[in-house]
Image (cartoon, rainbow, N blue to C red):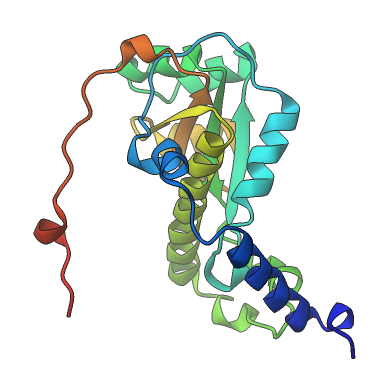
Length: 216
Protein backbone atom coordinates (compact mmCIF):
# COMPACT_ATOMS: atom_id res chain seq x y z
CA UNK A 1 0.00 0.00 0.00
CA UNK A 2 1.41 3.38 -0.97
CA UNK A 3 1.38 6.38 1.35
CA UNK A 4 -1.38 7.93 -0.75
CA UNK A 5 -3.49 4.82 -0.13
CA UNK A 6 -2.75 4.64 3.63
CA UNK A 7 -4.75 7.34 5.48
CA UNK A 8 -2.62 7.08 8.63
CA UNK A 9 0.65 7.47 6.75
CA UNK A 10 -0.78 10.38 4.77
CA UNK A 11 -1.94 12.12 7.96
CA UNK A 12 1.46 11.68 9.60
CA UNK A 13 3.29 13.00 6.55
CA UNK A 14 0.97 16.01 6.38
CA UNK A 15 1.67 16.97 10.00
CA UNK A 16 5.42 16.52 9.60
CA UNK A 17 5.43 18.68 6.48
CA UNK A 18 3.42 21.40 8.23
CA UNK A 19 5.78 21.41 11.23
CA UNK A 20 8.76 21.69 8.91
CA UNK A 21 7.12 24.59 7.08
CA UNK A 22 6.04 26.46 10.22
CA UNK A 23 7.73 25.23 13.42
CA UNK A 24 5.96 27.95 15.43
CA UNK A 25 3.96 31.10 14.87
CA UNK A 26 5.85 34.36 14.79
CA UNK A 27 5.37 36.74 17.73
CA UNK A 28 3.16 39.14 15.76
CA UNK A 29 0.73 36.32 14.90
CA UNK A 30 0.54 35.24 18.54
CA UNK A 31 -0.06 38.87 19.55
CA UNK A 32 -2.96 39.15 17.08
CA UNK A 33 -4.80 36.04 18.22
CA UNK A 34 -4.11 36.10 21.97
CA UNK A 35 -1.26 37.95 23.64
CA UNK A 36 -2.22 41.50 22.65
CA UNK A 37 -5.75 40.80 21.43
CA UNK A 38 -8.58 42.67 23.12
CA UNK A 39 -12.26 42.08 23.74
CA UNK A 40 -14.27 44.71 21.90
CA UNK A 41 -17.65 46.29 22.60
CA UNK A 42 -17.85 49.05 19.97
CA UNK A 43 -17.98 48.45 16.26
CA UNK A 44 -17.67 50.04 12.84
CA UNK A 45 -20.37 49.43 10.24
CA UNK A 46 -18.05 47.45 7.96
CA UNK A 47 -20.02 44.32 6.99
CA UNK A 48 -19.02 40.68 7.43
CA UNK A 49 -19.70 38.58 4.33
CA UNK A 50 -21.19 35.12 4.08
CA UNK A 51 -17.85 33.90 2.70
CA UNK A 52 -16.09 35.10 5.86
CA UNK A 53 -18.65 33.37 8.07
CA UNK A 54 -18.00 30.12 6.23
CA UNK A 55 -14.24 30.58 6.52
CA UNK A 56 -14.53 31.24 10.26
CA UNK A 57 -16.52 28.04 10.62
CA UNK A 58 -14.05 25.98 8.58
CA UNK A 59 -11.21 27.08 10.86
CA UNK A 60 -13.26 26.57 14.03
CA UNK A 61 -14.38 23.05 13.16
CA UNK A 62 -10.75 21.96 12.71
CA UNK A 63 -10.09 22.30 16.45
CA UNK A 64 -10.00 19.12 18.55
CA UNK A 65 -12.90 17.88 20.67
CA UNK A 66 -13.30 14.76 22.78
CA UNK A 67 -13.79 11.79 20.41
CA UNK A 68 -14.41 14.35 17.66
CA UNK A 69 -17.86 14.94 19.17
CA UNK A 70 -18.14 18.45 17.67
CA UNK A 71 -21.20 19.38 19.77
CA UNK A 72 -21.17 23.13 19.02
CA UNK A 73 -23.92 24.62 16.88
CA UNK A 74 -23.65 28.25 15.75
CA UNK A 75 -26.36 30.73 14.84
CA UNK A 76 -25.04 33.85 13.12
CA UNK A 77 -27.37 36.68 14.11
CA UNK A 78 -26.98 39.45 11.55
CA UNK A 79 -30.38 40.77 10.47
CA UNK A 80 -32.16 43.51 12.40
CA UNK A 81 -35.14 41.24 13.02
CA UNK A 82 -32.94 38.49 14.49
CA UNK A 83 -31.01 40.99 16.62
CA UNK A 84 -34.27 42.34 18.04
CA UNK A 85 -35.21 38.80 19.00
CA UNK A 86 -31.84 38.25 20.65
CA UNK A 87 -32.06 41.59 22.49
CA UNK A 88 -34.95 40.18 24.56
CA UNK A 89 -32.45 37.96 26.37
CA UNK A 90 -29.77 40.54 27.15
CA UNK A 91 -29.06 42.57 30.23
CA UNK A 92 -29.69 46.24 29.51
CA UNK A 93 -26.01 47.19 29.37
CA UNK A 94 -25.34 44.58 26.69
CA UNK A 95 -28.10 45.52 24.26
CA UNK A 96 -26.22 48.34 22.50
CA UNK A 97 -23.06 46.23 22.30
CA UNK A 98 -24.93 43.48 20.50
CA UNK A 99 -27.11 45.69 18.30
CA UNK A 100 -24.12 47.65 17.01
CA UNK A 101 -22.02 44.58 16.18
CA UNK A 102 -22.09 43.46 12.54
CA UNK A 103 -22.73 39.87 13.65
CA UNK A 104 -23.43 38.09 16.91
CA UNK A 105 -22.78 34.36 17.09
CA UNK A 106 -24.85 32.25 19.43
CA UNK A 107 -22.47 29.47 20.45
CA UNK A 108 -24.80 26.63 21.32
CA UNK A 109 -24.51 22.87 21.77
CA UNK A 110 -26.44 19.71 21.00
CA UNK A 111 -26.75 17.34 23.99
CA UNK A 112 -27.68 14.62 21.48
CA UNK A 113 -24.31 14.99 19.74
CA UNK A 114 -23.59 11.32 20.42
CA UNK A 115 -26.15 10.20 17.84
CA UNK A 116 -23.77 11.54 15.14
CA UNK A 117 -20.76 9.52 16.37
CA UNK A 118 -21.02 6.85 13.64
CA UNK A 119 -20.11 9.65 11.20
CA UNK A 120 -17.76 11.67 13.42
CA UNK A 121 -15.94 8.74 15.09
CA UNK A 122 -16.26 5.77 12.71
CA UNK A 123 -13.44 3.69 14.26
CA UNK A 124 -15.82 2.06 16.74
CA UNK A 125 -19.31 2.58 18.11
CA UNK A 126 -18.99 4.88 21.14
CA UNK A 127 -22.71 5.65 21.42
CA UNK A 128 -23.18 3.30 24.41
CA UNK A 129 -20.93 5.63 26.43
CA UNK A 130 -23.61 8.33 26.18
CA UNK A 131 -26.98 6.71 25.47
CA UNK A 132 -29.30 7.13 28.47
CA UNK A 133 -26.71 9.19 30.37
CA UNK A 134 -28.14 12.70 30.22
CA UNK A 135 -25.78 14.26 32.78
CA UNK A 136 -22.70 12.88 31.02
CA UNK A 137 -24.02 14.09 27.66
CA UNK A 138 -24.68 17.56 29.06
CA UNK A 139 -21.24 17.98 30.64
CA UNK A 140 -19.46 16.62 27.56
CA UNK A 141 -21.42 18.91 25.25
CA UNK A 142 -20.90 21.98 27.43
CA UNK A 143 -17.18 21.39 27.87
CA UNK A 144 -16.46 20.70 24.23
CA UNK A 145 -18.70 23.46 22.86
CA UNK A 146 -16.83 25.86 25.14
CA UNK A 147 -13.60 24.65 23.57
CA UNK A 148 -15.11 25.21 20.14
CA UNK A 149 -16.21 28.67 21.20
CA UNK A 150 -12.59 29.49 22.05
CA UNK A 151 -11.48 28.15 18.67
CA UNK A 152 -14.15 30.37 17.12
CA UNK A 153 -12.71 33.47 18.77
CA UNK A 154 -9.20 32.59 17.60
CA UNK A 155 -10.51 31.97 14.07
CA UNK A 156 -12.21 35.37 14.00
CA UNK A 157 -9.05 37.14 15.13
CA UNK A 158 -6.83 35.16 12.76
CA UNK A 159 -8.86 36.47 9.80
CA UNK A 160 -8.39 40.10 10.82
CA UNK A 161 -11.68 40.64 12.63
CA UNK A 162 -12.36 41.49 16.27
CA UNK A 163 -14.49 39.69 18.84
CA UNK A 164 -16.22 40.42 22.13
CA UNK A 165 -17.67 37.45 23.98
CA UNK A 166 -20.71 38.00 26.23
CA UNK A 167 -22.37 36.02 29.00
CA UNK A 168 -24.75 38.71 30.31
CA UNK A 169 -27.93 37.18 28.93
CA UNK A 170 -30.66 34.67 29.74
CA UNK A 171 -29.91 31.24 28.29
CA UNK A 172 -33.54 30.29 28.84
CA UNK A 173 -34.82 33.17 26.71
CA UNK A 174 -32.29 32.48 23.93
CA UNK A 175 -33.20 28.79 23.91
CA UNK A 176 -36.92 29.54 23.76
CA UNK A 177 -36.46 32.15 21.03
CA UNK A 178 -34.00 30.34 18.78
CA UNK A 179 -33.97 26.65 19.69
CA UNK A 180 -37.53 25.73 20.65
CA UNK A 181 -38.24 22.11 19.77
CA UNK A 182 -34.66 21.36 18.67
CA UNK A 183 -33.03 20.20 21.91
CA UNK A 184 -30.16 22.65 21.36
CA UNK A 185 -28.97 24.82 24.23
CA UNK A 186 -27.08 28.13 24.21
CA UNK A 187 -23.64 28.38 25.80
CA UNK A 188 -22.47 31.99 25.25
CA UNK A 189 -22.57 34.84 22.75
CA UNK A 190 -19.83 36.38 20.61
CA UNK A 191 -20.15 39.77 18.98
CA UNK A 192 -17.72 40.16 16.11
CA UNK A 193 -16.79 42.29 13.16
CA UNK A 194 -14.42 45.23 12.77
CA UNK A 195 -14.03 47.09 16.05
CA UNK A 196 -13.97 50.77 16.84
CA UNK A 197 -10.75 50.91 18.86
CA UNK A 198 -11.65 54.36 20.23
CA UNK A 199 -13.78 52.63 22.87
CA UNK A 200 -10.89 50.61 24.34
CA UNK A 201 -9.57 51.17 27.85
CA UNK A 202 -6.40 49.88 29.49
CA UNK A 203 -5.95 46.13 29.47
CA UNK A 204 -6.87 44.46 32.75
CA UNK A 205 -4.23 42.57 34.74
CA UNK A 206 -3.50 38.86 34.50
CA UNK A 207 -1.98 36.50 37.06
CA UNK A 208 1.74 35.81 36.94
CA UNK A 209 2.86 32.26 36.17
CA UNK A 210 3.94 31.66 39.76
CA UNK A 211 0.54 32.65 41.14
CA UNK A 212 -1.54 30.06 39.30
CA UNK A 213 0.81 27.47 37.80
CA UNK A 214 2.92 24.69 39.28
CA UNK A 215 5.43 22.26 37.85
CA UNK A 216 5.50 18.90 39.62
